Length: 434
Image (cartoon, rainbow, N blue to C red; front, side, top):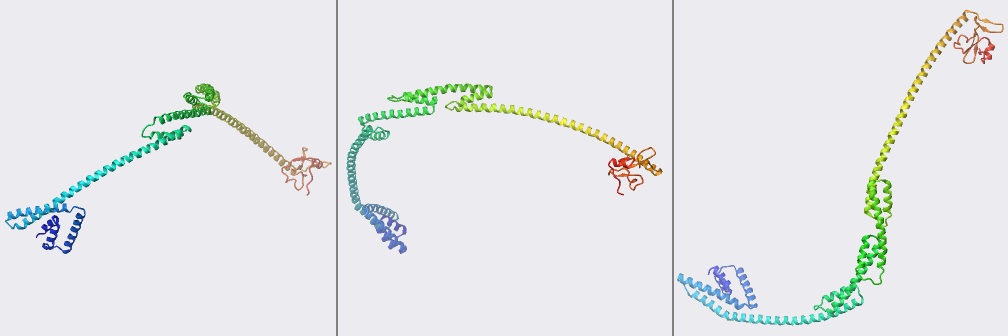
């Protein structure tokens, strides 16, 4: 038998396929044993799963088809028909044997499924009843909790208790009109209390920061609630007085600011600054505009100061130039005067030189005369020449020299001449030591 036929028998009816595999194939024993073990495991799984007759039915159908094909082939080839007929009969037997069992198994399966479906439906109905019962019990518990929460909120009216009660009442499956009405009463009370708190805070804010905006906000809140035993109206009246007063001051400050913006004068600026600084509620817009005007005025003052400084600098430069000019004139005058003095000194020096030259010439003549003439000496010891001039020389060192003495001829620049020794002594001169 060919290998592919063995494979077909292994797939169609594995007991016959195993028989044919061991008898007609030359496969290795390891492969044969592995196939046998594998198919045995599959068969065991099929048997344990209750699908034995179904698998026999399928195998009978395959064997019947194999036998039918074999018979047709034997008729065509005019071969032996005994084996194909046997295979065909085996397929018919397996199909006939397993078909009733498969039908019984299918009927049992259907009956089991119907029973399971019935049990499942009954279980669902039971669970539904239990769920409805639990839901009713839960609703009763929720109703009790909601009622208790509403009573607590009525006794202690605050936001926390109201929210807790509201949550429980809303969570009820069936609306309770009584609890809803009681909640609305509590809610109205809390809303009024909340508005009262907002009104009080708004009035306090208006008192702390007295502006028209804060006053209007507080007035709107106070007007929206029914005040009982409250001093908010009185407090708002005081705030209004202050706001009106500030608005008047603000108008004056605005007018003063507009004036200084128009004329850009420092006095107007100071007046506007005083009014703006006096505002109890600081106006940032006015302060900003005032600063901008101050910048313009300061810039103008700086420009004027710079011009004055420039004028002063120019005046100072002119004064310095005048002083420099006067100094130059004085220096020129000094130089002229010094030149005149130098000229006078030169002339005086020339005169002195001329005089000295004359004197030196005269002395030289006198010496020459003294050499050539014997000096005349009077009886009283006087030394005079022929013209009666004194011949005793008085030196600059306070010493007198008589004609013929050691230093007489060496004294070339005598300071004075004397006619006698007594006259020289009387003038404070002394005789030489040698």
